[in-house]
Amino acid sequence: MAEHEMGPIEVLVAEHRVIGAVLGCMERMASRIEEGGTADLESARRAVEFMNGYADRLHHEKEEAILFPTLGRLGILSSNRPFVMMCHEHEMGRAHLRRMGKFLDSWSAGGAAGRQAALSFAADARSYASLFREHIRREDDELFPAVHRALHRDDLSVLADAFDSADRESLRPDARERLTELARTLLDRWPAPEEPDAEKPDPPLSRAARA
Image 1 (cartoon, one colour):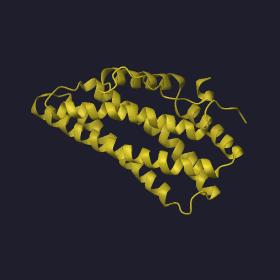
Image 2: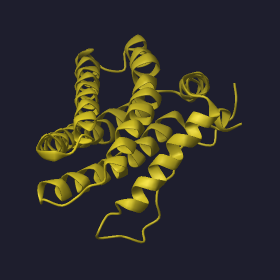
Image 3: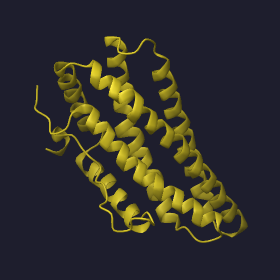
Image 4: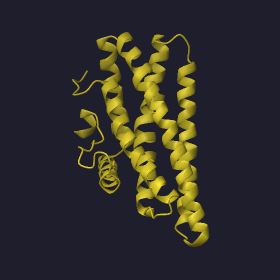
């Protein structure tokens, strides 16, 4: 088993931090659109690309394919209901992303139809952000602490190895670099107003995935 710079649960929490930062960018885009201003279409495309690649493919797939089955097999929780609910919320998020992708196509056409598509994008972006802010809160505050208490060191090491393998298999190195750059670009373009000079989180990758 490999030694790891971060434990598997810490990796997921760090990924949540990056996802939350980009959710903030999406919320600020939505506000600009709703106030009648212009939120550039390219930023919206980047946000959807990032969430599809990083939040869904990299992060959620680790939870669905590795973490939740492991916890179920070890009997960490008394029922599978939390896992079913969280996977259902992942599917809800995927539906939001598909809709936002369609709105982007109409938005690019301009005119009245484009304006309406931008407003629809803003509404879906807000719903998506609201869904996953609460989803992340439950995982960080409720599920992950319970996992840390219940799993032994060997269990965590096996989980970390599985995460490393999943990261390598899900995205090529150039794709991971692309997601990192997308996050940095969005955070530069849409910084949080209360902390414009705050350090921007980098998408964390497992040690093996960076190698």
